[in-house]
Length: 257
Length: 255
Image (tube, rainbow over all chains, first blue to last red; front, side, top):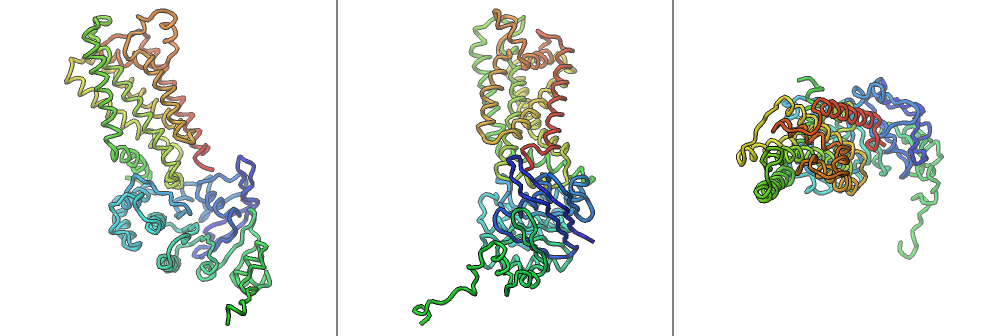
């Protein structure tokens, strides 16, 4: 079954900017799919259209067979979003943030309590449970956003640059967690600027540029398609910056000696 | 409870929780403000003013103050809450949930309605302790207050959704709402105004709301009660439908 089926998706903002120009994409159930592209390529717009935060101007999106517009309730019920920005409510405590989110998705109180306890533990937030969210550090906010996205046990988890600006420890922790829940059956759509992250975690990867999917496949097939040795060089070829390839970096003989 | 009931209860609980967390600002300040109005206009000035239409001045003023407390708190709460959440991006959590536009709109509306209701009830209790405040027409009073509260809740939502900065909310409150309330006859009887001010007052919708609430309490009105109730019901329904359309279209909520 397809977890996500996007067909000819278009998004034109009222300003006239065409953020998405006929994007088609399929993510199979259970897959860990990477979406890579430079800033402004359309990654976040695609995610916003999928989660109802933006309204497509053309095309269609189906989430586990439910149209994201016509059957938005069923479609959104299946999706968990950890956005790029720390969009958390300053008035709420950490625990309330999780509890309310689960409530928005119709989870009964007892189940909310158990799930909150479990995720606070998983994301090392138990000691912070009564703190207002605005007092949290950047890393803690990132943990909270991920925990919130997981609260209602979504079948499709969308992670929009989840490791941007986090320390190495948390990044590795998140990688382990993402792999674990993927193995348990959660489909994951991941956007990232860290190519080694995509290479290590993702089953398949799509490159998006100027609102269009320009290439799609495994890390190896993408490298083959761009006739380069690895994903990073394939990405550099995509953005027209081949000269930045690490293979072109020559050690300064004086420094080297 | 069904999933939809849990969802709606949570959306509403979040709105109530927000203002309950800052009680000093959201409940304490309006109560103090109303108490000061009663003290200054009722006790201090009132002692120098004869009865208005056979009613003690302080008793004449209090229904308008209760209506003012209900309306301004319902309005302020919703406009601020929505704008603040838009600013923080936190509203995305509700918008990306399975909640329908009607559920979201009602939950946001009822947050402000609850705050207005609490302030209005506390003002009524405090007033009843200070003066002998009658309730002559409870069957007019309750629907009138309900409609006034719901109308201003909806107005707060509308302004909050449209607003792009805090200045937009402040403008609506300071330059539109407050003058209309003050010139709507909270502190005086429009029947005693010279022309053209008396006639002009009849173009102020708040004037009819104040008269409805005043009639509910003290039995005095300068307007037709059935017509005013009908007009207020129509206005409340109209603003609700406008908001529902905005929420359905995602106007300034969804990109």
